[in-house]
Image (cartoon, rainbow, N blue to C red):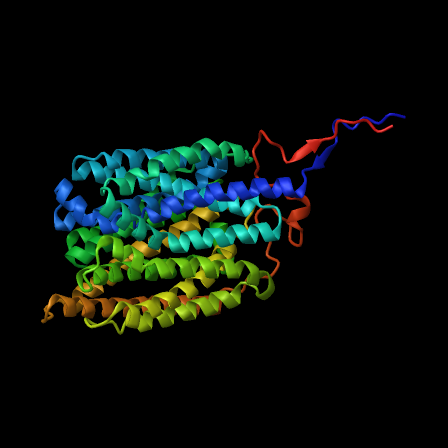
Length: 509
């Protein structure tokens, strides 16, 4: 008897599957690196931008803040875009929007033009970043591949800021400040072209966009970030500062009210039902805040006290980047054996110790003798923290909520960077107000006070890790039933045109 098997599908061979998921990881890792490093790549180019486009000293900081506000404020909406429209179109659309902002920003002829394009860049990044994390959470079928993907994501996210400083120094010193933006154009176009080959179609969640939640959450977050940034310049009693905070409270309260009553919220409040995820969201605020604060003060110290060039300043952060990447790779091997909680606790302790060490900074501090050591210690701690923090943040989430969970995880980190930096700068201003002595001593005094604030932030983070976070060793990833081996049944997000199953074309006699 002849049995037709034309309709029977056999799983793709493991080498073929591994090859495709490996290429998908390359694509999404490059996209993640592009949007993360753009938060810092402009830092060392700011003096050149100021001269070229006529920025005032006060407005110059908005080259950085405009991107941070758009990125952080729109992340919640960006995370839901992937759930409702599909992750592949969300990824490609976000990359193209980011690329457009980069192109037009690199061609800017005045300050307003550049700031507007930084907002567009931030909007594109707000779609790309949570989509990348969703693809990692759902697109890698075995635990080993998924751990590798999380390690790459953690390394890129943690080291991206320092890599941006190096790249910005190289481009500013050797070409032009415009190329810190234009460099994204060929990369973004290439990513958009190859993405359909390696990122498959994902099921779309039923429903519509929660525009009420999107408007109130984005407006509330933006006003909150703006309030802190404005307070660092104008003080906490300034009418604009107070008005921003009041507006933020009103909008965020409205957001909670809307989300509790809409059937398809932009951020399902059930995401906060997990003590682990709630702790991770708070930890993300603290960790990214301390990292951005360290970048800010050490960049000032390197250029204004040690008289480093933009290129040398960027290279000074290279050991930090390398240590984060290397330790993230080590964590990929260790976490399946030791779990996630131990690296979270130990890494946060190391980061706290590094910031205490940095708080001893003085006008006489040298790079090799006084600063390299704590930077390496910080890098080791960050490399230990970022991977398990990302894993816990998206584990145990329903498939239809992966974009929302990813957006919320990224949003807390971006908000942490902006809000914490604003608080740290305010303390810096108070510490240096009326200070006497040369510029180097004043800067060192303010930086020391700023690092102590960062210490307080990480101590809070450590308490949250110890008290709240108890990740289960077998917590399922999105789309998996507890205890299920993803390698057996999970279907990775490969190209829709290259199905992971191959039909048998022979008949069995």
